[in-house]
Image (cartoon, rainbow, N blue to C red; front, side):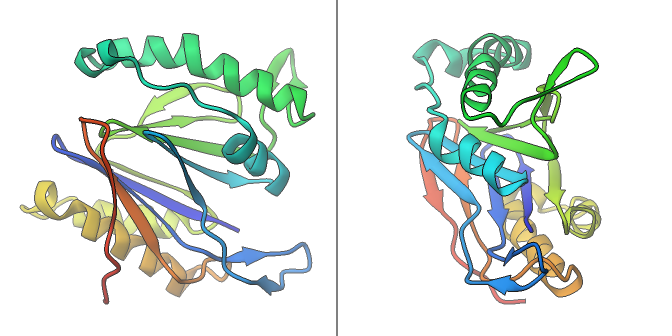
Length: 203
């Protein structure tokens, strides 16, 4: 299973995941990273393993145009809706990972998080877009991580230390969700497009 969390401030966005893999018999397999980097994109998916593989490894996300760096929130929504969602839909359909339910295309039982240029977006199973700000969490331990993030978000130093809090939230999920396991790792994404791997912390 999978637990992924994001935290956001005006200066950067962090995305953190655990590494547990559980098979259909609920046996724990060797650890695997859940966040994939493509150029300036960080892609995380929770859900059916084949769908996650398609969304993270087979789907090719385009470079971010220079003009996007100056766009407001609505501009980013429009660009992702016009440029990114059709790529996801086409890729999933080509790999037979797309279903039609009540006339609407869906990615079955999966959640996708896209992070770039200090911003985080969720793509729902029905391919709807949500901006994730100031925090969010998905996956089997998502509710545990979300509760921890809600508490940490009250701290006065959130804007300076939210990546640390995000990592602690995932570590909390590994303690209380039987499908989430260490090691915990993550990345920081900056408005410039720069990506930096976060250092592990002890709690």
